[in-house]
Image (cartoon, rainbow, N blue to C red; front, side, top):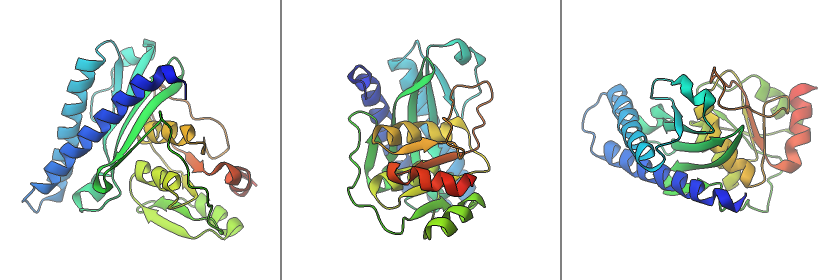
Length: 248
């Protein structure tokens, strides 16, 4: 990671961490049985905090957020923060650990910095300084997939590599599971938006993981339509076998 992007990574880290702490307070103080209301309240509280902080600390930058109306001016901007205030709202409301806060910076065509907070386990992963991957790789490799929508493409990888499946919520939590050594492969298909993958992708790439679409092509961000349906994150040594299984 280029050291001139360290201040942006530090800001991403601080904002994601603080938003995560706010969400823990929201969840800890919730006394209602209405989990849908808790999900909405968490989204809104984190969005309000991140929007205010970015407006104050990066006033000249544009923002693309899941919880805010899209502003087409971002398409002409040099710097765009891509934010998911609460990734994994269902898991958040259910009291699980696999939810996240995503804060990433896109600059002139490339993701430059980002952070993924996993507040329920008290960790935030940032692109600079980059996380260090565990040395060991499980054999057979483990693959993390969506709790609610495991893609059929994952079946090909499972069969080719004899990969045990781990079901988990939140794209950020799943990507960080690969980074943390809880799994070696994450395959997603069937739909995401840029805010689902931007921060996880830049943090994972900084750590040396392979990040791409399922055909191996790069993911492009700050597009007019932020729909971004595919994501592959895996250890670099597994990239070719996984891509062969997906596209063979």
